[in-house]
Amino acid sequence: MDSTIALLASSQPVSQGAEAALYKGTLHSASAPLLLKHRFAKGYRHPTLDASLTKARVAGEARALMKCLRSGVSVPGIRFVDASAGVLGIEWIDGRSVRFLLGGGDEGVDDEEADETEETEEEDALAEYGVARDELMRRIGTEIAKMHLADIVHGDLTTSNMMLRLPSASPTNQPTLFLIDFGLAYTSALAEDKAVDLYVLERAFGSTHPDAEPLFAGVLAAYEERMGKHWLPVRRKLEDVRLRGRKRSMVG
Amino acid sequence: MPGRVRRCPLKTPDRPYLALGLEGSANKLGAGVIRHDVDGSSTVLSNLRHTYITPPGEGFLPRDTALHHREWALKVIKDAMKQAGVSIHDCDCICYTKGPGMGAPLQSVALVARTLSLLYNKPLVGVNHCVGHIEMGREITGAQNPVVLYVSGGNTQVIAYSRQCYRIFGETLDIAVGNCLDRFARVINLSNDPSPGYNIEQEAKKGKRLLPLPYTTKGMDVSLSGILTSTEALTLDKRFRADGQPNGPDDTDYFTPADLCFTLQETVFAMLVEITERAMAHIGSKEVLIVGGVGSNVRLQEMMGIMARERDGNVFATDERFCIDNGIMIAQAGLLSFRMGHSTPLTKSTCTQRFRTDEVHVAWRA
Picture 1 (cartoon, chains in turn orange, cyan):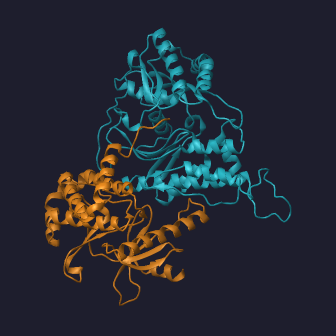
Picture 2 (cartoon, chains in turn brown, yellow):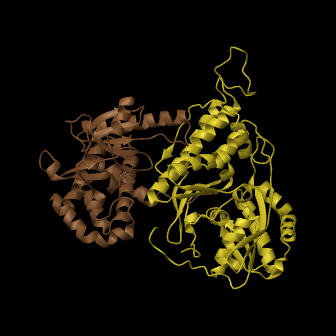
Picture 3 (cartoon, chains in turn brown, cyan):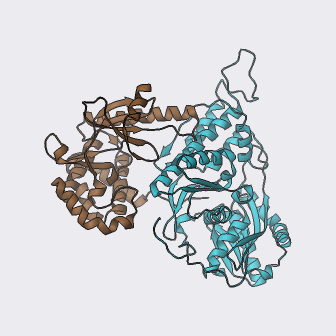
């Protein structure tokens, strides 16, 4: 516990969300950098409840990552877990989020501000990685299919939760796509859950990227190819989910 | 959104406006009169309420509730006008709850509103109940553009304003939080007077032991029905002492109704604060406003306050006069809409049980 706190103290804060604070640190002076995700204690929650929730969530996230790694899904490797302290350490990915690369700006940046610089920056950004848009979409579809074939449902698929690693930072000198943030992930074999996962991503594309339709079609095509015979049930459910929407009319 | 200034479309009134608001979507019948002055300020002239209270262990049925509203409507409205010191002749419009709510009680109040409208030749304004809560909360607390947590017996929603619409960011997937608390109050036979939720809150203050319950946030949504079932199941546990007393000096491993109230509150409120915090982080807001009947729970306000402080933000809440269903909030939302030139023709003055918060065009905000 104390060594975990010391590790956090020696690390650089990167950003802070509602759930956790992110740090960049190293385990020892010679090791590669890692990303530390600290689910800090919430003052409003009863301490007992808070402790058990934090522990379960860190362990759950580590477990989902572990399962992905074993199934060959491209996710950051696990470097460090201290569930009681609420800290998860994962491989540091040198790159940008897909959201940024597609010109959706960084998360939390006002839409209208980002609009102005969007076009030019986006071209430059993707060119630097040497990946065409269509190729990027294809990789996204393939990675999601691999994850779903392992019966892992991400729970929060958005373009902010995918990263492209810089070719220069990669051992193979190739740009690699990573799925990140498994904080809401769970295990499920149901076509329904996988369809909802895809639907959430479809909505995320629609709300953050212009001409989202052809982009998402590219994702689905690659997904379909990789899923093989498992695609049909998911497709049927996806059609249902789209009709249903997430929000129904409520009584009271 | 920061950095963008749009002019508020609502003009300052050229003369004082008066509105009568009638509310009866659940077991409270409310009538209130509000005045919008030329300097842009609002004054609550009267705000009266009569609640249909059922015996312990029972909820309120639509038919009986409608009967209650019919019996009390005239007295409550007359008293409200008397206290306000004005006549219905002076009012500019009569506002009533169009929905959402229980059908029968809604209809009985809408009938009263239509009758008054014809008798006094005043325009009607149909109001969305949820928007009424939000507008009254903003008016009373002065919060400008908060994330709204709307928690009551029928609704549990996290709402934020965007482009003339109150968008729902998260909500309950099954029952409302007030419903969850009230039903548990009935399981352990707490009184419905003044409200089951209030009595749960008082019991919870005596509770000390936190028992494990499911914790079911799903993204920005919550699910509450399973938590109610689990809490009910705990009342059948061997360690449960319905009288709140241990069986003897050796009896240490036990829990009481107060402990269950405490556990239930701590768990569901933590879930609500968590989804509210997520919505705040998502849209980058620092203000949070709690409205609806459960919003008068001091423990919920306290927890929300801690969360807001951790984010350098502020929490706004009101007391039971404005949190719990009332007529004045209907008058406030209705008058805002009326001043934008909107009214409901008699032939369209229906009510509906299903009426989502995001269906309303919020014409009066920038």
